[in-house]
Image (tube, rainbow, N blue to C red):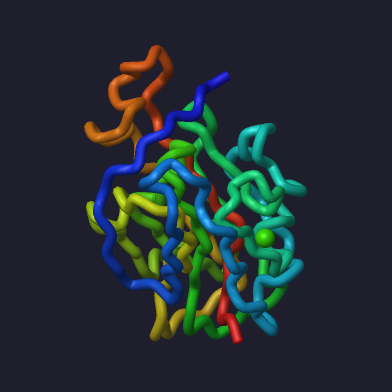
Length: 212
Ligand SMILES: [Ca+2]
């Protein structure tokens, strides 16, 4: 089982996101302040719809399985709050496909992700959003990338990595997230220096389609 490390060195920045909540108190070794959960969303078109994953999350961090991605429940900055699902580098890539049940005009797609470097959890390097009418042929409609500063933010954050202003139509939505990969050189676990694998976790808890 991997070990948690305790490093708090990095920078912060904002990117193309809806929410970026900063935690505090970590640098001096105290626990981060309790995090407010994002404001409840009234509805989105993916809520409760069937979800398939390329591969399941780690059994350590699996919430209630794939359906947790569309249950409208968001995690906090506590990665152990049972809302987040975690994908370790040994798991398959994060690829989630949602069947909306009917053709939908899509204006916005987003994924809610967590970063907590002290727990080896980093935002994805990028998220690709694709849409299909038949469930076989997918067309990429947006890519959201995170910057180096976003990826190496010091404090816990949660973000909606989102694509807006879309003019797509489709019944199926596919979201693919690229993991951070090897821990950065400032991180205690970099290069497996502490005897562990030196790889980052990816934590995601929700995929949203046209949130209102
Ligand atoms: Ca959820």
